[in-house]
Length: 139
Ligand code: HEM
Image (cartoon, rainbow, N blue to C red; front, side, top):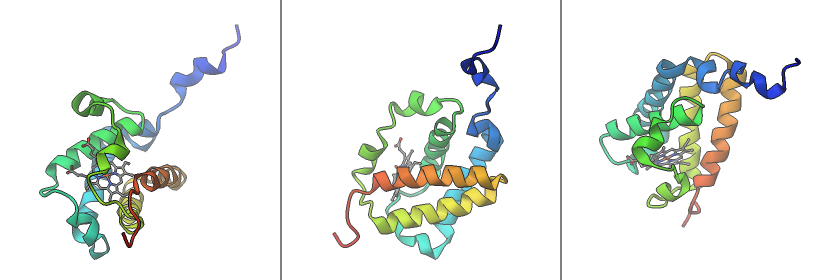
């Protein structure tokens, strides 16, 4: 009669639901690129991005949606993420990672009200970003 822990899984909100779903993720992705476009600290990061940013705004939104536990339209459109491989054509240095995290940190705190959850997500994104590094700063 007792419920197994696994029976309750459907009751546990995904981060996608917890932050407010589609609207919030859309805001997070757009805020991230707005900051990248406007803040001089991210100038180098902006410079390696193909312009205009319309396409990557959409693709990054789809990726974040999937990553947060929402609908998986990303894989339907783009296939398996293979995120590190997709970044290999670009020079990703520790300095660029710092710029990426700077934009994401600002966008996250602007968008997600729950600071604890925001910090958890930023910690996981930091590990992901670290994994994208494919060159030294002075290479
Ligand atoms: C560490 C520093 C990073 C740099 C310098 C960087 C840079 C870039 C660049 C230049 C592109 C190509 C944009 C385009 O095709 O228009 C790209 C694509 C992408 N990045 Fe990053 N990125 C970084 C970290 C991350 C992280 C941590 C994530 C995930 C949370 C991420 C997710 C993506 C996605 C989903 C794409 C598009 C992949 C696709 O084509 O399907 N990036 N990134």
